[in-house]
Every structure is written in structure tokens, then in C-alpha cells.
Length: 290
Image (cartoon, rainbow, N blue to C red; front, side, top):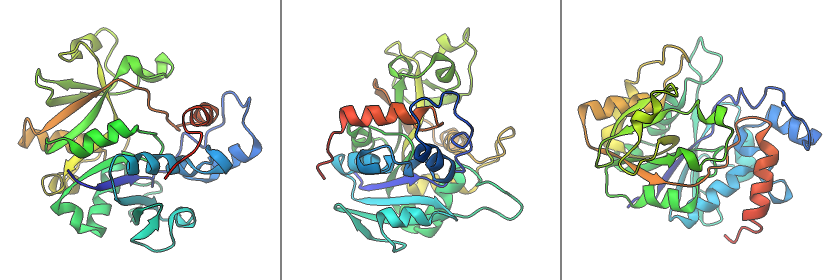
């Protein structure tokens, strides 16, 4: 088992900044925060606390103690919430450190999730000598999901979510990449935007279609090379974690398992998600008992 969690929070939040398709229920404060803040810092909880509070709460319940939050160059607000030091801030029993994802010269936006994680491992090289979990700041992963990544004996793993258990519009679900697993649950491939006719070919041994919501466990020593050498996605012009992971398993097959999970994952991608996440937290997290 390990106790390290890297939370990716340095993205540009481009889709969140787009106008809502249904402003009903959104306050001016909601809209302003969505336009100005990183998604994980949008105040969707009690007393305006951010979604990231709830990610950290579940992480603590799952047994994590060392948290590394990857922030952007303009990420000072994170330190207002979780500690003004670069490293080893104490927050409700957690030790929180910040890594900065710097934007390379010549780019306007960050260079993607692999680049975020690579910069974190460069700033905290101890991550390259141990295992760690990686997740997004704008998805609320359950205690069970985070705990399963912490406790798995597989050197690398990801949560393979049952597509049918996700409570999203079908059009949105159809955009998720699908995982191809062997009969023992080892990751073979990740297929982007499979056609409706083809997606049935990727059901696992339990008959489920599995997708990733960017919750991984990595062997730091094994992954570092692939983070450093990750190629740029030809369409999105970013370095993405699935690419680095697939390159790793080409060289080290049967080292990454998909942990099956059937549950919804609350998600803050766009303004339309804010009300739904607020309602979910009000119903399921009436009080955080740290």
C-alpha cells in the first residue's frame, strides 16, 4: 500500500468557461467562479467550500496522507484554501504540497495531463521511487475507488467504471474512451470515441463496457520514463496520461489492471454540471467529519 495522491488541478478549464446552455439555478457567483477559478475550487459545497474539499475528504477516508496538488502558474488561490507553503501544509490531518505546471514557451495553455504529472515528479522526485495514485480535481471519486487504488497489489492500475452506472447524458458518455481488457483484467488498449457498432466488442469478462475517469495507480519508477517521453496527441496538441500508460504497457505487458467499479462519478466539466454537483453533495455529504 502507499499513501501518496497526486491531484491534477492545473488545466485551463476551457469547457467550464463556455456559456451555460441552461442558466436556470446558477447564481451570478456561480458563473463568476466558473469563469475565473480552477474547476476544483468552484464553491459547490456547504458555505461555499470547493469540490476539492470533498476529494480530499474521501482521500483521507481511503487512507492517503501525502497529497500533491498540481496547480497552474496562476494557482495562488489554492494556497488560500489549503496552505501558503509550497510543501507540507497541514490540512485536516493531511500533508499538502503544491507542484506548479509551468507552460512551455510558445504555448498559451498547459501541455496536458502527462506534462502535469511529469512536472510534479520533477519537483518531487521522491514520487519516482514509490507508488502513487493520480486523479482529477474536478471529479469526486468515492472512498471505495480511491482505497482500491491504494490497496491493489498490481504495480499499475486504473478504475474501470461500468459505463451503464454513470449518470450522464448518453451523448456525453459516448465521448468517453473505452478500455480493452484481457480475460484477467489487464489493460490492453484504450479506444477513443468507439463507434456504437464497435463498442460492443470491448465488453469485459463481466459483460461490462469499462471507461476511465482518470483515476490511476502508478509505479513511479516504471512510469517516469514514459511521462518524460510522452508524444503529443496529434489532434488535441497535448501530452495525455492514457498515451503514456499505453506506451508503458507495450514494454511491460500485464502490469496494469482495470479495477471494476459500478458507480457514478460526479463531475464538474461545464457550468451545466454545477447545480447537479451541488445537489449531489447536499444529499450525500451533509457534513464532513474530518
